[in-house]
Length: 206
Image (cartoon, rainbow, N blue to C red; front, side):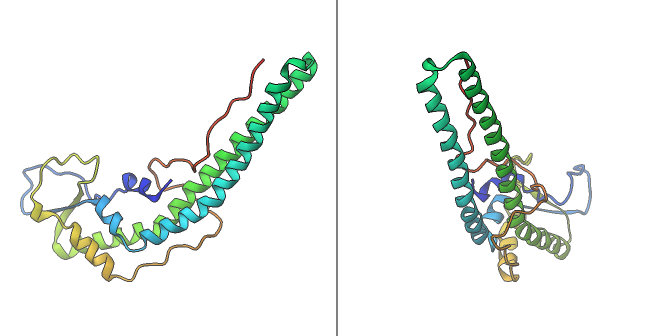
């Protein structure tokens, strides 16, 4: 999982569409995907996230290997087991599977929270710059034309994406959080994939 998963959840629109008959209002638009791609601190945040995910993926892989070992051993010995022994082994596998799913789900939630924590300073900077440019330019609204936008055509002279990026680079970026334990707060939103290795296995059945 990479921080690019956050681009789709970035809500940079600073207002709602208004009627075409509105008079004397100035509008502008940005591409949030391009802004986040160039935002100061993004590369560092992404590197920190990948570093955190390395240990998490290793833990997930260890759990997966342990469960696979139990399943393979059961498959080899199944024919020689008594009904009582077979049921006991199946119960052990079911318990291990439930533990695996619970722990991997918790890890996924930690990964999402960590991603949100790392992105928060960057998102705050972007929102501040957008607010500043909207006030400076006297814009009534700044729209986002990234994926999912309803705007199908616009005057390129109203595109202030480059101005946002330039202003972000001029501003002193806030340092990304260090690789500490994940924050308890929930992710800011948007789909986030699980760390590599978070798959679901089913124990054998009778």
